[in-house]
Image 1: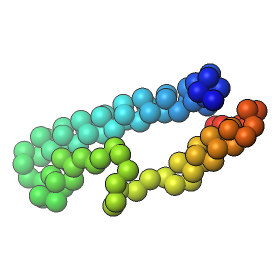
Image 2 (image 1 turned 135 degrees about the horizontal axis):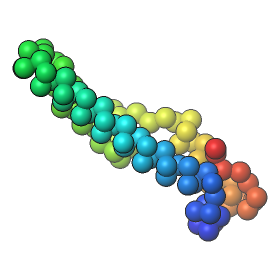
Image 3 (image 1 turned 90 degrees about the vertical axis):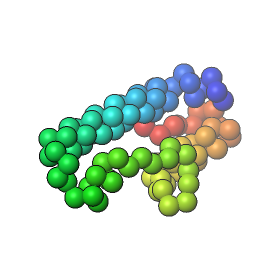
Length: 90
């Protein structure tokens, strides 16, 4: 199954989405830091807290997931075990 998955365009796209998402998140975090510095400490504390906020990357209570996206991949991999021609999510 691993050969089928890693050879698929869908899996390569998933990896690209991960790289793109991290790039976007780092960029957003940097812009928020720039905004904070430009305001010379005058932002209300709730916004400073939000700017410095980090979230876990693993599944944890209180930190949601896109269940439809995760479920589509989980179901597709289950289907692939039964049918090597089954589709992966695009």
